[in-house]
Length: 528
Image (cartoon, rainbow, N blue to C red; front, side, top):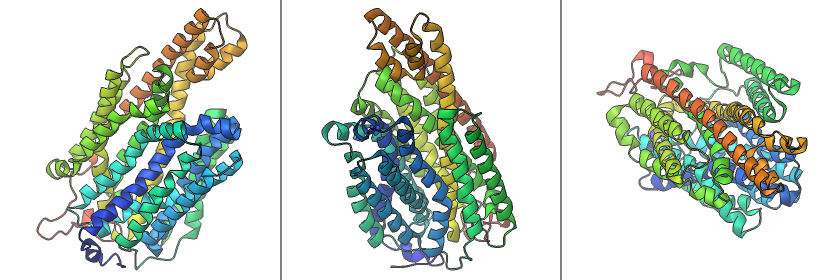
């Protein structure tokens, strides 16, 4: 079963099988998102079982992020050139094989290597799982298909701690990676037998210089962001990586605008639906990464839940997400993309602001309500934003266009952890330092490292002193969490206003002919 981008109707006539294929594609996105948050929950166990140092623990996460972010663009381009289904299956097999081998590692360095391999697989899966959809579904069906795919991916964020907690309670640490294998085993045959092949039959020669520059630039930028929490923004290595990555990316942009056959056609950004939907998607990646970064310690340390209990308490976000994503296609058809994306961002920011009111003694009811509102807003905003991105792309560039959006999202998420983490740490240390008078210097330094460390240190202090330290650390953490959440909410409100001003509500097509006017055509001259 094979189609080209000029024969998309063949793919759309697959009948009910395409909805089963959508399930396989949804599993692909779910396993990627799930793996990220599962690992965060499992890191303390990995430290104990593998004897990993703090630096090695950091790189168990960072190796994956670096490979993923750096290779997204080349992976999308290769899918457009050689076949999106073929490359997606290869990506799934790489990710699955890396997961199985990772589960059997006996050293931290071996696990770091396998995490990089999994990042390669993830870089292929993320853009191509979305870029395949236009070949399978009509423009009227595509919003629902994208809503299912987006919801599957976002479900992995809150599900991760729940799955990790259960696995680590009942099985060995390797199970957090081995669990990916059966999911991949279901996804691979579903994709291979049910998804039509698609590619750009007129693809130009690959721009290898552009590919090398994009990998080097994105990797340099993300590496600097990864190193910042441990070394600070003024560290020479951090500065060199950030500046070097930015300079290389600037050179990449200049090269791409001058080449006759660029790696990625940056004229895509002339389409306002693509540009503002991508911006909204990137900002949500920034803000939601910050939210997950602060809410997990709050639920686990301040509210005293174990990993599995933390996952259970994130379920309202899942419920809100499903409630919002379910009717998003029908609401978008009625209200337009502008209203749904801007409105969804405002609803999400309202939930984040509500969550910022949580304190050390706040009951779970407020937290549950806030998480449900956050999930609802994401469900409203993200599917129409992704649909607008895909709908704006020329049929031959859906792979690279999706990869471009995903790359910006990954960079946004990386900056989210670094910038919002700095806000959290500065607020936490500033609030707590005034409550540490009279304690030994070693205890003060440990307490300032983080709320979890402060709670562990307090167990070895006399009763009243330990309780006083725990209370001060929890109050300081809640103060820092509120600053992070308010900053995230403010950013989303600002972008919501810009989206309301500049994002076209609907694709500019003539209802009778389906043709787009010249100013809304894609860079390749095909309908956007």
